[in-house]
Length: 339
Image (cartoon, rainbow, N blue to C red):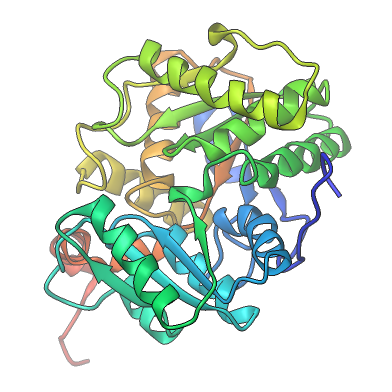
């Protein structure tokens, strides 16, 4: 039980915290990677930590169906469908995106898991209508917010903050900087609040990957403060945090959300060829590209210690707009000559 809330247990915890010897030698920075891509269920990913708490709450309320929201290729939706399948619940994903013209990547996995995906023009009305549809069929619907990012969902990464603190202590890297993707804020908020409330010596920096959400660092911090206020009131925390306590970056979103970016793909190739770890082009790829650029820019000093949060999401490499770029660049490795 964490802060008074129970969960189901569907993850393989603790996830590994690994030292990346090759890239560390290249960069002159000690890089560790937290393998939250190895959480199990439907290729894994960070959202499963949050879903352990949502599923428990849903079951306690007698829910029979989970409904959530996200982009057409939502990793969160795929993992919500996985958790639902594991516990015998129905699941639906509502997206405001248009049908992409093919069933690929996460959409294949959604279908394999038996999850309905609704592409709607009016997003808010679509969510209401989908929930009403299932309720009319006699289902008891439990709504999971985008990214699992609310007061309950942040518990998954509050717990991860405690897990990381213990692992860092064992590895002798108590002063490391955690670098994580920042999107719907739940993962970052859980880490930031968990580290602060548990008096951990670790620090966390969030890399914004969604250019359309906020225009400035100040706007991100304002959103963090609003979220923190809700968390503090919900749990009755005796904890004070100021806007400046939220270490966030706005300079590495590469101009849009989930857009193909050559620099990001180069980062993916570099990680794969030096450490045999696969990242995704939307979230972890942009965060890794940000780390590489911050090292070059001197924002991450030589000799420092960094924990890179691998939050999963690699099915995204199979979406059409990314796949076409990979095919163009990687064709040189395909040999058709007969020997």
